[in-house]
Amino acid sequence: MPPNVLLLCTDQQRFSALGAYGNDEIETPNLDRLAAQGVVFENCYVQSPVCAPSRASLMTGKYLHAHGLWANGVGLPDGERLFSKDLAEAGYDCGLVGKFHLNACFGGRSEKRHDDGFRVFRWAHDPYPGSSENEYHRWLYTLRPDLAGADVDYDTLPTDLHYSRWIGNQTIDFLTRSRDRDKPFLFIANFFDPHHGFGAPEEYVRRYREKQLTRPIPDDLAGKPPIQTEASKASYAGHARGYTSYTADELQEVKAAYYAMVTLVDDEVGRILDALDAEGLGEDTLVVFTSDHGEMLGDHQLMLKGPMMYDQAVRVPLILRWPAEIAPGTRSPELVQWIDLAPTILTAAGLDPRGQGQDLLPLATNRARARGWALSEYRNSGHPYDPAVHLTMLRRDQWKLVVQHGSPATSRERPGELYDVVADPNEQQNLWDDPLHRGIRTELQEFLLDVLVATEDRSQARVADW
Image (tube, rainbow, N blue to C red; front, side):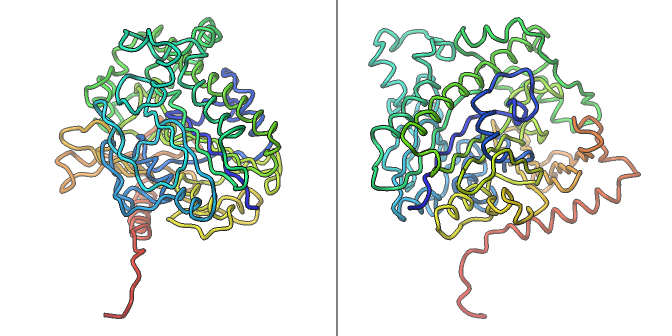
């Protein structure tokens, strides 16, 4: 029988919010244990710094310009195929709990269901009041009918009522009770934390409130594209507080809450992994842990996410554990991408890979090298700016290039960013206009053009020469 697949995905967890990635401030013992039992990909980049476009890249294995879901609030075209559908047709029992976000969910509406292959579909976009189809709220109000219609801070509810606990409970229910035991399974647990609002149960926040946590990475935005100064003053194109409105104490409170959310998720992951082992499934299951994008958390005078391509926004944790194939304690410095997960999972299941990604298992076992570059795109993809903001990031070798596009794509100017992430890992020194780096900037811009041509969707069969 092919392996089971358990995909654990958080929302807005930057790569550094994990002990296995060198953070000694945060408590993540269960995820650190998972990392020690498998492979840690140290340089995984998502295809967009915002939710829906990134998640569409995960499920299709394609870049934004190939799958067409270019912004939050845009639906994935009906013709795009999800890897979960391939697994379902191959005999997998497929299930999902939590967020999905392949279609618009704003204003309390339910998300349009794609042809996804999931037999179990326990959808809840987020923990906040909205769609009547939100299964978390159905569960919560059954337990506590007094909360329905009440003024409730859902982020800080007690642990036993919390959204992350519900995700853990539903995942454990699938593993122990509701899966089809005659089939291999794919189960996707999509946590909402550590997405803002910044809050967690008191017992978790208390662990960090009195700690001396590191302060944000400083930056002089005068040397960066003007859109960053704009976003520093007001996030989400004016729909959320910007960095400049936070006091130093508030920034530390935010970080404490953010870390608390991650630790809550870590505890739920521990419960899920214990249930997996209790069912005797650990050896035969490919476990994947990752996140859809990062969080700026005050670094570079920026909060949340949006038109920025710093590692805090587009570099995420990626851990794979499959005892039958991956040696414990493996670490890979290769540049990998979120589009690589679909072909990795399909190949592990014995199916033909789809999409534009690369199977990661040969990298985890030192049988291959990665492509050597990563691409991320922002096409006015979050709350829309006027004029529109379009960014394309290329990471290659020690270089990161960020192009902000101008006319005719938008009436904005055409500034950019260039960083040597080996010499300047915090991306503070923008070399875009440095005459000494004009040659490498030109080389990377030309290479980016070649990458965009190479990643066009040419999947339509050519049936004749003319």
